[in-house]
Length: 367
Image (cartoon, rainbow, N blue to C red):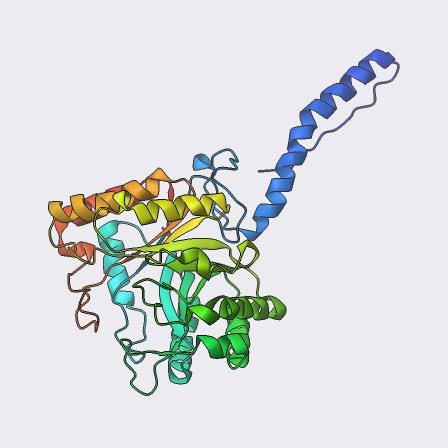
């Protein structure tokens, strides 16, 4: 939106009644602009979308003014390719992302990756996150921060919970270092502390007793350090007791879920969680999604059981503002419940349909 300028001309000997009429017209015409400018000022902290052709009117039901929230009716497209199988296989699979981009027809705006408080893992993964910021393409990193250490086993299947230590301040210096890193990167970032908490998610081993205090400590340190444009994403897989992990609206920017099961649009849990997010006036991110139990290789069957229901879910709720897909083969991944090839390029039917839907003007890409 552009600022409105109004110029009064010298009227000479025009009658007072004309001046009064002009003043009334001025007030009526400019009053809505005052409201618009207030909204515009608030949105300066959010994602800029240079696509006025597809912009929509402001709607409180679609837009909450959250950090990095795109405009009403827009959805950030995110992805990653092969998933790290250990802290040593830490690099972003750029070749896999290029293949995904070629087959889908669109380069993702969000790039997904991870970091941990484990001393070795933190040092290694920190370098990878810096590498994302050095790319010529303007990606938005989406970083999963777990509440674990992986010493001494180095296995992602056998983490050691450090949630209490985070809550009590043992990792304050590392949190400050991460905040300063993000400040130095000077770009928008989505951060998922303690991602997939509770239930059967990756974060299920993190202590529920200390979880909220750990989140709040991280949040406060980031704010104290002056980290701007960092959206705190509160993310679960299937924790039915999710509100017992809730730090409070003032500590959370986005709500998020993972979608791995078939027929997501029929899931009572997902629908309830997404509706609850709207009641708290929070945009929703599908923070991780992949066809865990069917893969992409089933062609039409995969599409009908997993992909179409996922997109139906996303398009049902206008406050779902980001969709992140894991385009991985899952080969050699330690958790064998992820056993099916989920790369869209592995099936022509899926890749064609997937690319067609991503061409919907609602999606924000790096094209």
